[in-house]
Length: 113
Length: 115
Image (cartoon, rainbow over all chains, first blue to last red; front, side):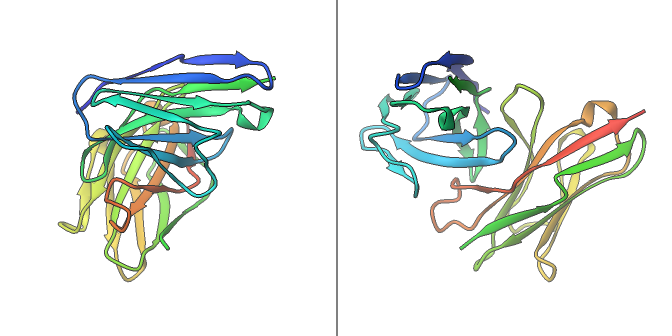
């Protein structure tokens, strides 16, 4: 198993600003994943973050909008840049424990005004 | 391309009744299939997974799911609902093409349990 801590748990931000979400894991993991869960919807994978290399983004997500850092095997950050109300979502960090068994953080609930 | 369809965005059952949450998948190769549960204001928790071993998979909290290749289904069941089962349930699929940890999630089914 894995224990994942995310910060902040929630935030209210102004349009045009940026917010960085932190994800800390209690064990070393190769791959970390960032998901977005828009209100009332399912999870969509934003990107996969490997330590020591650039993140791999899914279709519809770009590095300029969602820059990701992965400085070591237990930590990652996701920045939501130049925010608009459409970015209001829950952002979830997850790690793969074993063959697709993902453990998730509790999420960061972002509201953009 | 792989995909997941969950039939019924909302399901309501009485406490003690059978829970049946439906999931159909599309995958060109034998998939891995998962059910996750999300309680209010929490992250997702793995209930169970299918990885080409036994077709009937037992998970936590009394839930189980059966993989039926002929029907491309992976429905989640529990014989007797408990109030604490009220949550959102997500079915997910991975066919390994992007790595078995790259999951595609269904839209979710919100389960309500009433007395």
